[in-house]
Image (cartoon, rainbow, N blue to C red):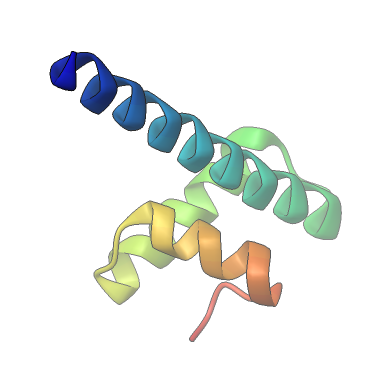
Length: 69
């Protein structure tokens, strides 16, 4: 039972992160009039430049509207 609950928590977290990344992509697509692939490349570039996980970059973008610190 505990393993099933742990797995459920992991799946819920993954879904939440996926939605947050999707929202960040949507913001970039709308703001810059670019494709989804181009928006994803911007997120990846920011993630690598700052040496932080993509989910953190996406979360910050959703909260602040900015890719930079």
